[in-house]
Length: 252
Image (cartoon, rainbow, N blue to C red; front, side, top):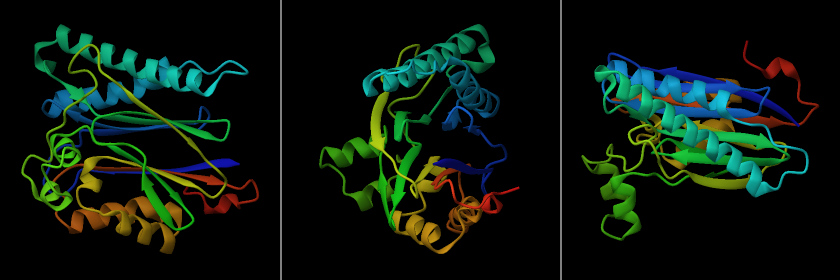
């Protein structure tokens, strides 16, 4: 199985600066999306630090490591990332209060190890169906889970951008972890909320089922912009291809 990644980030239609960052570390099997907050300079700094530090902090698994041990390595790398961002903010008043979402996937041994803080998302697309494999750490998601808001009310809420966890705002944060078996033909999709706030799972399925994967990030971004584009939009797509898949499909 070969990993074929495609990624794109766009400022959107309303913002002047892009505070999203993404990571493609194909040689490690590590991919991530981060959506920074705290103002232009601070948000950009937080998201960029998140993806750079995550790559540096991840310790590769030893031979024979258990699934829980592998997931723990990814979660610890995210803990370390949060502490680094927090310490940077404490040393510079202009960066005070900065933080970022961070959703990361580490592919190892036919499994996707997902670590997650915030409301950037990870989806698994297989056989024409898509499943969200992260749960948003947001105020509206918690209200829906508690039965206090409907899904539709959550989508229309003016509080939908309020997140309840972020990396770096405090020195320690709870990092959710998930392990998903994967197989050749699967696609993992990571995105910031600039995409997920506008597109339903049916939209994602339609694009992924009807177009080349290399074209999907731009098509998804175009669709989110056409529906408002009031935030930065970032998409990372990882196609888990059969070894026989022609390399000419890959974006240049």
